[in-house]
Image 1 (tube, rainbow, N blue to C red):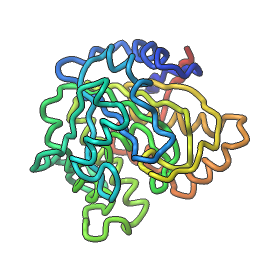
Image 2 (cartoon, helix red, strand yellow):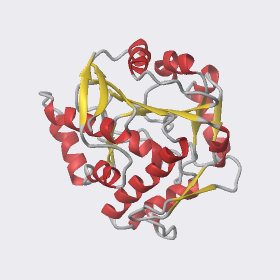
Image 3 (cartoon, rainbow, N blue to C red):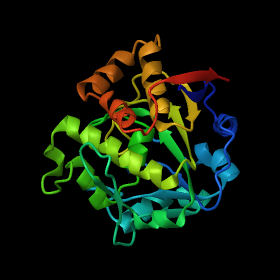
Length: 287
């Protein structure tokens, strides 16, 4: 059955909130608002004020987890300072989910590459999820969207190493690449299952560089902005974004497509669909 994906070409803070309303879902209890806080020096990440209308509408706490590499977000102290420097803490309640251990271990018997996922223990206080993603390229995954936010985004610093290393953390940057992509899909489903359908996803196709917001030194955007998408299905929303990149007439798309294809990025949503995270079939509803 095709999943509904709502789409608007109007990229404004207010349009994000209006598109969210189309999902007709009430995120109850304590709401985790997953964002990308942006590495220090990155010029492309979506700033806190852009997300303010939808976060104010839903309520909740902006959440992040520490990274597995050197930078401005690899320790709790550094990450909290980055949240301050980038304006998140001025506008919203914020929390680093893996600020205190031990990590929460999620079992994944269905996993094709990994059978457990290590996420920030702070997730336990939240009942529902609003996953706000900046769709763009990525040096390792080919692209970054909702599935990456669910997997790498919620993983603790150790959990990120575990996913990247496909269960082996000693040399986690050099694991078999396709196995890493499939491990991301495995981990994403564990977080989706944790929220048991109490989750909504928004992807914004703007400032699309071939590099991620995790890069302190990133290429400038190579393709014109496309729009905002919203869905209850993280696989469908990512697949729709990929399709929109291929379908655009923008001459810069070749550079982004080369990044996606060189990293076999399309494998991630396919692997996620194979284990039941969502559907590759979708109905794009333009509003």
